[in-house]
Length: 359
Image (cartoon, rainbow, N blue to C red; front, side, top):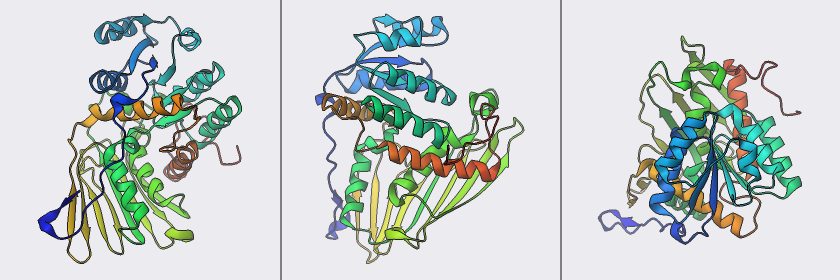
């Protein structure tokens, strides 16, 4: 939007609708942890969506969550919440290894469902969710909130207009430090950096470039039994992205720059860190011209954009979000599966190994 120093180039304005104009739905939450808390706080602060009901494995946690957010209903089981006629949409906010079963149960109950990222542990589970949703005609969306942010619609328009020319390189990194008692260090909860953090760099690359021809990955272990950090290179040999590489990294051992860039033959688009959250974007063209898009860096207050997107889709009778189709969620997990195969990153609940594509 801003033409830096009057250089004759600008970035487009985001086309994101006003979240307060999205049809208000009554949300039932499965989970009462960190992400659920921030999701509801964002809804209450920025939308007309209604945090309505909650269930959590610990009843006391669910009751405290409902009191804190003024939610009228606490359910004694996930099944009870999903069967409630006054719940319009379900938000799955439990640990990663619960996403698959809870999503399938919500679909079976006929409830539209938004599933925290990643959609499932692996691509095979994600395909089961997609198949069940298709058969039932039920809306399902992975809560990859980044792609619903106004900032990402600016990026979307830049790519659609070909302002960068042919894309050569995508780089993305996300590293955070976690205390030793954090759940991310537990194998029995599908811990390690790849699902919590690596989802964002991999989703960024596959959103821009699609499915790669080749994946190369390396990792370093953590004493807890999960991985401490993982790096991957995605190579593209065919199609419109032939010749491109994506260089990705994620870590739970230390804070890293958390940067993201898209580099093409005509210029580079740089996302302010953390690249996957609300914030600014800078376009620098090869001829020296530059433009800037500014967006308030409100961090997880931006979660409401994904809720508004889901509400609009459900009200319109859609079964998927055009911003995050299930095929894209599956493609991302297929890359993550290959990264985990190469690095030996198998979770406790995958006793038979990571399911392959044929399953």
